[in-house]
Image (cartoon, rainbow, N blue to C red; front, side, top):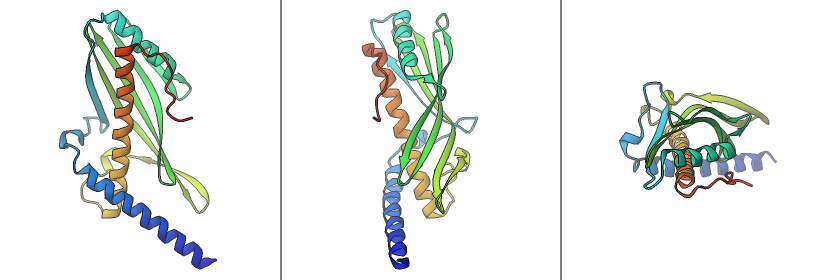
Length: 196
């Protein structure tokens, strides 16, 4: 029995190491300007959406609908709605799996609106790492400013794992920005049903 457990552990570690190495290789293709923290040590992404032919009020209504349907729970709430200034801000949570562990990515989503365009910004402000240790679920806060690629001099296995986390964050928030962009352009008011 002990040999089987050791063998399974070796297989899991090998699989994790191999997939993590792929993350490190993939990260090399991410432009350097996308691997930078802001002045508050947070990771931010933003894009401008061209909403040609839509007024500020029409864009605001579409963005507000997105927030109403997707930021309406205790862990995802609308923080600010200012129609006059054209600002919507929501605080949200994305859960992302990585192997047998998962991450809670707490973020701020902001939409700034003008006639014919909107700026969508998303910022990671807290990351919780949930993992199993000796049969007990453990939680550890992850500080971005102590993570690879922001701190390059780390052991390779740590770099590999943190490269995977960085790519998970990037992918998750690019998807979120795409969904908000779609809502602005198409008037989509349905809740995100990404995992059911």
